[in-house]
Image 1: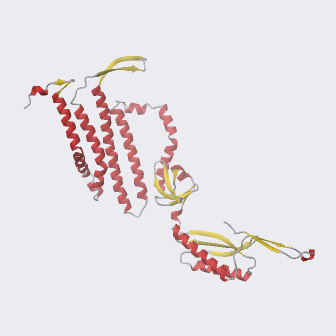
Image 2: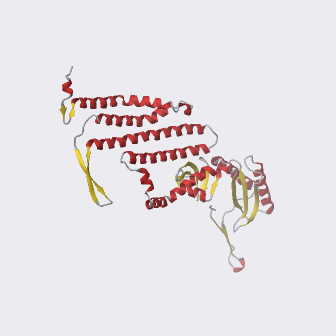
Length: 392
């Protein structure tokens, strides 16, 4: 056996016993860090098992494994380093701003600095664990929301997740100020004065957008997944955050609109409509007689009324006389609002209109000009047509 005097030998200001404790604690923490963190994660899950109501333990462990490992690592390093003495001392002079003089010197050792650093890191890891717990709770709530038909809860859960994580971050920030830097947080908050007013004015727009997000949740003008149009932007709502709403446009780009703009502007929720309107006009040639025009209009109207996917208030009528065509206007409403299905029905009706026009021995017109020369002038008569395809 080793003599106890061996462990009392000192090297660089520390005994062999202190070095052995330092190495033993550090080695034990590094070896069992993953095992202990997984065990703590499973034990902590017991508190949320009834809340989850499903087998979400793997998700919980995956979320908390890393932050708990970091917490154990910093705690192990802190305990092991505290077994050693740090003789080096630094003198810090404290300056009194009220009298403009340097006060008495304050001795600071390396151990004091190490304690502050590790306290800072340990507090960070603890609040990281809190943030991951919020992630798990939101994961469970999103799973429950996916089982319901309403989309309001799908929209509310991410918002509450961001809200609580922001609160945790603020609490963590003031905790660090109080415990690590020994700042009187209450005095700091109450002493902001003019600075606090300036910050409030600078954050005025952000506050308005935050209040706008609450208005969106209370009034529910739209929910996640709705097709909306606001300020000329049309797309599907993907997320409602603190400050802005994310909209996936038809071009598959992501548009970010401040929440204040979502409630102050004219917002059109196109997902709530029960019909899509189609309105257009086309021209037929001037050679078409009145009876043929009437037959074409009546056949188009009858076909629209008889179509299974259009409403009964559709119509077609002879609109008027154009520069180079006789114009017919068509209006109808498609009962299927899904965009691709709507386009398919619109195409089907367009093909039918072409068939009706051709069957009645008429044709579609395009812009033309006709030049006629007079025979009495001694020249031969000429007739010329110049045409261009009509474009939308």
